[in-house]
Image (tube, rainbow over all chains, first blue to last red; front, side):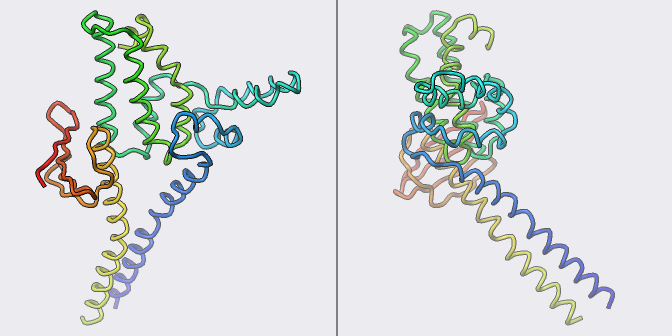
Length: 192
Length: 86
């Protein structure tokens, strides 16, 4: 009899153990899918356009929310005519540094392991191109390297935009900062 | 004895039934991952409908359009996508 009761307890325990894990993952995926008002096809422009969902973002990723808060109060004292377009721009997430970007890409669940590895390969290839360029081994000008850089960023954004729109927007807003590092010999050599 | 067998039978069946959605989700995630890797490497696929795991980080993916690709991680740590004969 005690065996039967023990078996029932084990059964109940296993039921509860099996039932609980799916709940958080569903909650996470639905939470990630809620803030997708923009068109999924256009990667780069769509990520900038919507100003309305931006203020709601910071609670989702606390690491990104540190910098932009003091910027918002500065907008109201300006002229009322130019205020709405000006106020829309600083609401975006701050540009990421490379370390933080790398870390967030490693941690995101929006991309599978093989995809992450494949992306890393392509990032390494691009960095090798820049290394060769600065060493004089690659006979192209800097503008010609902008194409592969933009293309790689577009691939990353297209992989992230549906499941991790916050990170996608952060990366998009960091595009020029990232290019600024790659296009500057000294900054690039510090990075490498 | 009969009751115990029934309980353990029910236990195994329930465990298997509860594990099925998790396995299906894992399978879907793996198929998406493979499709993304194939696309990242500039190959035509669209959607991976099935895959076989040949080893650790070594898969043969079958796409909706009938193309088959071997996707594996080389010794140098690179993800390689090789088109297979249909």
